Length: 351
Ligand code: ASP
Image (cartoon, rainbow, N blue to C red):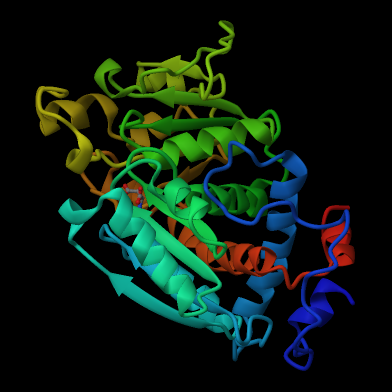
């Protein structure tokens, strides 16, 4: 059976035919916690499958039964618009049952209560839990205590792998292979889980990554390309540039990142005005990038601070494509994690 056939509206998977005899072609991940353990072929499978999902999403009636009978719980301990809604839509397009639980009770988030929650959700036969949590590592803890698939939808300042996958997919759709392309991330790198996951994904795919921001907002533990480090969990090597004009020079892609004030301690910036003066992505600054550069932002944007309104809505901006592609990528990921994809399909997708 091909991936296309399995996703076709007439090809409802029969019960009992979905997973358990999966030999070598199997996509190797049961959870999606970050991209640090994803190899290039794993990511390529997601990107190729996302193309097929995008085609389904663009149909007049975007519904297929590929995940019928599959139950997903969105468990969000932090605010979210794009990520939560796009997982909901992704699940619905594929025919899954998807339930969203929102909680703002972040002060009660301790080991046991989180473990109890995911165990309870599994006892109700949830197949996957999409989890956003203010504490780095919380989804890893959850994954140790349930056999439902855990998808990290953002854990503190640590990781946001599905944002990184949608960023990779959006670049891939617009410029093809990103190997050797200059991708510049500008802003609050230190507190950005998007930046961390993007670093893994982009470097795995061979991009030349430049991070730019004021020294107080560049991540601790960041490695510079010509100084190898053997530290465990070290981020992949990148170029660090504190001068935005130099960073943007000849860039293929510029990604602006929001100031994560909810995670910053005081004193990191003299003022917002000062920050905007030195680090806002503007048309004048983008004139240094390649003529056909792309402008991205994971959202939510603070126009007038990290990004100027005219460029955010301008002809180089693919920010809305990122949002649409987020649904397609999450469809691909849910389908892969469900185990309903046949090994031959994975092999086909990876060639
Ligand atoms: N939406 C992204 C996140 O959850 C980026 C941001 O909030 O600035 O990390």
